[in-house]
Image 1 (cartoon, helix red, strand yellow):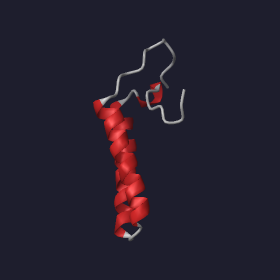
Image 2 (cartoon, one colour):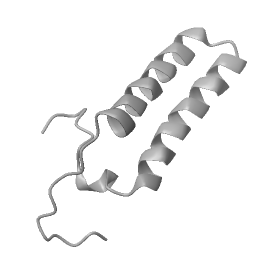
Image 3 (cartoon, one colour):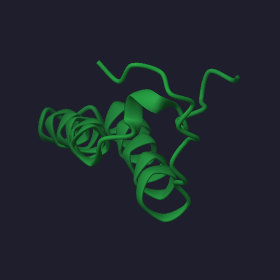
Length: 69
């Protein structure tokens, strides 16, 4: 498993995928509002990548019977 692999059982619930993407996008806007263009670009790109991975290319991981708590 790679560090950037988002296809884990942790992200199975939709609300977690939405929350992670929204927080990243919100932080990009905070950085942009404070004038830190480099950080805003970095977090904006990260939120775009997360949106692609979570909502376009996402496939639910196989359910292997583990506890989901």
